[in-house]
Amino acid sequence: MPLHGVGSRQDLPLPLELVALGAGLTLAITFILVLRSWGDPKWCEFRGRPLPGLTRLVDNPILQWVLRLVVLGVFAVAILALVAGKDKISNPFPGFLFVWVWVGLVPVSLVGGHLWRTLNPVRTLLLWRGALRRESQEPLPMGLYPAALGLLAFTWLELVQPDRATTQVLKWWALAFAAAMLAGALVAGPRWISSAEPFETFASTMARMSPWQRREGVLHLVNPLRHVSSAVPRRGLWAVCCVLLGSTAFDSLSNGPWWIRTTQSAAVPSWLTGTLGLAACVALVTLTFWWGVRAVEHAVSPRQPLMDSLARSMVPIVAGYALAHYATLLVLEGQRVAINLSDPLVRGDNWFGTAEMGVNGAIFDYTTVVAWGQVLLIVGAHVVGVLSAHDIAVRYLPRERWRSAQLPLLAVMVLYTCGGLFLLFA
Amino acid sequence: MSIDVVMKDGKLTPGGDRVTISKGSEVSVAVTSDVDLLVHVHGYDKELHAGPGKDAKVTFTADMVGSFEIEAHDPARIIALLVVK
Image 1 (tube, rainbow over the protein chains, first blue to last red):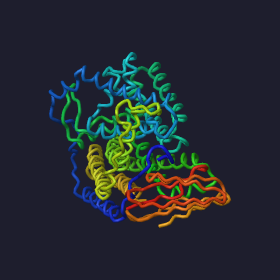
Image 2 (tube, each protein chain N blue to C red):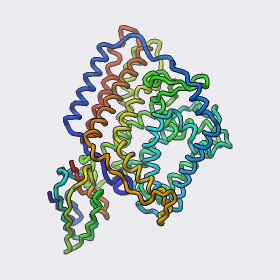
Image 3 (cartoon, each protein chain N blue to C red):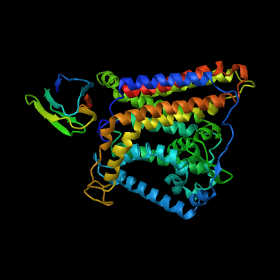
């Protein structure tokens, strides 16, 4: 969180007893699952209840266009605030970007599935290049690696860039983003968006946990665990997940008193310590994940790469941690953005009637509920991740190797979960 | 609970400590500085302007629960994290 701008009030750190309980439960559940685990994969294929009525409603072009235009309109107001609004704390753009878009896409995708792919204003603006056609939803052969880089750049902006809550700085980043999307779409076609647009990739990754899946054009209601374990992994999914998990971990770390005390008084400038910290967190997640996957790959014959396949089981952990970490920010600062959007030029207007409203801070009266919710989300996400990882691994592993080969990966997942809990406590 | 902020010869103390108090307690923040310094308590929105020979002090009741940053401007540093339970 920047020193000013987004975030005036934060959650209480988790009480130690709750962290210990969460960590203990994590270990116990993982251990039990491994001991009692099954040999045949349960969630390898698609299965779901077809919903033709819902499909017709969702695919209605009028409804889609109305929603697209509303989203485009909201983005237009935000961009107006960015380029023409005064660079003051009440400018809505930083909150819009870091809270409404970055955090908001998580619940939107978990509940709405691939909704963002349909409503993404980047696609609407590039419709002349075919960005609204179904074929453009397939990434290019290079996979999601460009998006992973884009996400790394964005998280650097979110966590390290000095003066990141000012329109002065954000203007340049917005320009770079627009240029990269336009240039790529001109050169490589609309599939560039599916390969390189970081926010849509983030949304699509989270949408793997949603209960909606399309098959032969029809929406089906599916079990999210089955969805995440059976949907085809995109090339480079492991890179996306490692960046997301590593950056959320660094966000927690860098807001803790240890980090602040250590880096503030050091002679090293904060952008450097921040860059090193973010890089170290992402590298740590990548190395540990690679180590866990490698153990499975070594026991599989014929040898095949499993980084992307097993990255599917990291998705629940990313989703759980993101929600636990950012939910109250969305509820609190999200309201502030709604208030400030009525005055995008920061000159006293009230376009949508919300400018005089106050932020309802009631959520902070329920700190125990919030703390329990955070622990349940993180532990629950861990359980889903472990179940999914096991299911995917046994598709490839021979019977006699399936316990020993999975132990490193399970240990790594326990590390992520307990690490996440500990960081929320610090 | 009183938090004493001292800026002397470029060194600012405290440098990011966590201070935990219970809801409803009285908090007093006192700033002594040898340069012009602006200290801001987030959430409670209290501003203290201190300077050479001019100490600043504010006392308030911590009636909101949460974690609130107490930070200085110029240089931008986090002084303390006020945790109200």
